[in-house]
Image (cartoon, rainbow, N blue to C red):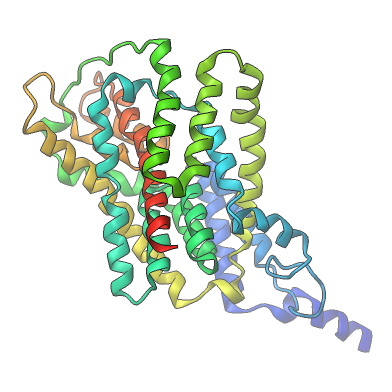
Amino acid sequence: MEGFFHFLSYSGFANVTIGHMVMIAAGLFFIYIAIKKDYEPLLLVPIGFGILLGNIPFMENVGLQIGIYEQGSVLNYLYYGVVKGIYPPLIFLGIGAMTDFSAMLSNPKLVLLGAAAQVGIFLTLLGALALGFSPEEAGAIGIIGGADGPTAIFIASKLAPHLIGAIAIAAYSYMGLVPIIQPPIMKLLTTKKERLIRMKPPRAVSKKEKIMFPIVGFIATGFISPGALPLLGMLFFGNVLKESGVTKRLMETARNPLIDIVTILLGVTVGASTQATTFLTPQSVLIFVLGAASFAVATAGGVLFAKFMNLFLKEGNKINPLIGAAGVSAVPDSARVAHNIGQMFDKDNYLLMHAMGPNVSGVIGSAVAAGILISFLL
């Protein structure tokens, strides 16, 4: 019986807390909406299962070396890629190899919508400061408004490593909930007449422009925001692999096997970092609230700036304000949401290609914003 009770003391039944059960329920919810609702399944399934993995109760600090925060454990080694910001640039390499910047290049003024959506980052930073977070923590929290999980992890690894788990989960949660969060804001801030605006078809972009853009774009943004060089460099390098036409094998590796492997490792370890004994704190709750506000403000910022631009554009050249919401960098979900909302009011109005312009510029904008924050706050 002594041996049985010794075994029992090491089991999950003896070490379970209410916090563990709350987090397990959260993990099951992530998996449910990913499978049932098809909300970002490539992200939410690994994160959801990672939450389960990190919240099976066990006796801590007895040398088992199984927890993600225990030195020497397998999960701790895998989590190193998150803590040191290794995974995000690799994700950006794959994104660059998949991204077509034609929509943005064909209508450069759409870049302004991607920039306008970043207002959520800086307003949330001020809100976090008002709630008592340090400047470094506030900067890391604010980036959630960009709806860019890898960028959020990268800046958190530099400015607030102790908040990586909460920031990463918040960023990816709101990325997955784009189809729920954005539509009410878009409908509230636009009129029926504005939603029916049809934009001119984008012009054809030459191969020369496509090759030159990632090179010129990297040099320009790199000089502006050196703090984001790992992200910007890998993003534009991946795009060079795609557009050059002579590195097909490298492009395919970056956009398929590499990004899939890194997404699995990042998702599972970020999920596992929500271990209840260290994750469930008042700070985590505040981060989720601020993240939601940041994402809502970013969406509103893009929509309202599109309406502002229309004041100076002639009839026939106006922008459908719905695509302003795609200025957040949740690629391509936010662009798809803008397109779907547009088709609810006009089934023949195809906004997807137009929405991809601010969407991809939002990816660049959030990385540049992260670099600026790192330069100021590190």
